[in-house]
Image 1 (cartoon, rainbow, N blue to C red):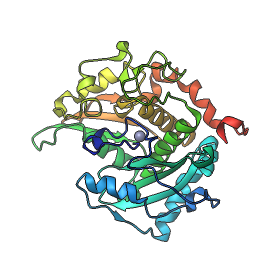
Image 2: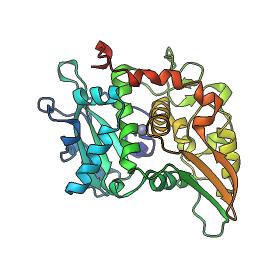
Image 3: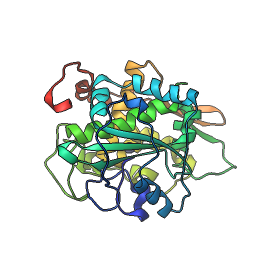
Amino acid sequence: MIAKRRLPFLFFAWLVLLFSTDGLAQKQGPIETSASFQRIQRAPESVFTLFRQAGMQPVNRTLTPVQKEKVRHAFERLPPVHQRILNRHLQSISFMDNMPNTALTSLLDSDGGTNRFNITFRASLLEETISEWASGKENTCFEPTANTTYRVRVEGGNLDAIVYVLMHEATHIVDAVMNITPHPAETQSVVEPTPFTKGLWHKMNVPDDKYLDTLLEKTRFRSGKLMPIRQAPAVYQTLSKTPFPSLYAMAAWSEDIAELATIYHLTSQLNQPFYVVVTKDQVELVRFEPMKSKLVKQRFKQLMIFYTNEKSSSVR
Ligand SMILES: [Zn+2]
């Protein structure tokens, strides 16, 4: 998730990375020289304000030594290019209780031409596994009903959820620094595609015509609305015919790169499982395993830029 300026649209806050001076941007001290995992600080006041205005009562959380170890391990598991870019561009990470989402990446300032970012995480994330967290997120797409025999769950292994969420948020920073997706000022602009978005995205938050589907357009991350869980089998069957690695990846091209990079890294580099299963009466109806999809696999070559050990000027 990345910050957007207008509060009523916090739900769609992943749509635009904020590059303005109103609201979120604020002056910071010199760039941190400590290791990235050690840059834990209270969140910028602007982030507290954003969440308060969304009706929450956010509270800073001080981490225990065990929780700090989880954070360190999560940073150590990032791809080399992510580690290098965070080292240069990550101003701070923060943990909070009572925030409306899992995590938020904000641009703080760009003094001297170096953009610096904060990532704020929901602190309770530190007590969840990837499977638990991802299952919870996936189920937010469906109407909660007790009288159903359908179930949706994600098998994403038992690593700490912070591993997934840090990789996802860090990819937003890497994307902002390397311009893997275009960064137009206006959400609705039609701009020159990058190799990553070409043929897949029409606008920042509108997939290419060939992947616009009436059912997928109704899912929460595209419409903001919930759907009956009995539609889940059809949703994942339809999703499997697209090059998108998750429902959330269809929210915007910035979420697409964050999800694709994260699920690829999780499965191919960290040897974890990742699939969504829909069951009815405990019988499996549909299994959506994006990294086995031919259309998704065709995109893997674009992710190799994250695994170079060479220091090029574009990734410092
Ligand atoms: Zn995101």
